[in-house]
Amino acid sequence: MEPIFFYRNPDMSSPSGQGPLGGLKIAVQPTLSVAGWPTEAGSQALIGYQALEDATVVERLQSNGAALIGATRVSEFGFGLRGNQAGKAIQQQQADAE
Image (cartoon, one colour):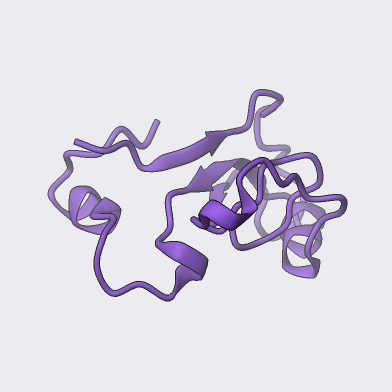
């Protein structure tokens, strides 16, 4: 089975518990920019690209206490209807989501 995560945050600290999202661990798609993380959007054209700054939604998640644990796999640019089966794996509790 294909792993859910495209990238795991090596610097993930424990959720701070501060703010309305405190204590939550969040994974984002690699279509959202997280500074220093690979942001390839599932595309061969973007292999090796790393975000220079956080997307607004990422800034808001973090400022409200969420801990970013990694980026999930995604079809190319998030447009695909076929391909990755991560959602199905989560439903069937077969995914390594830790």
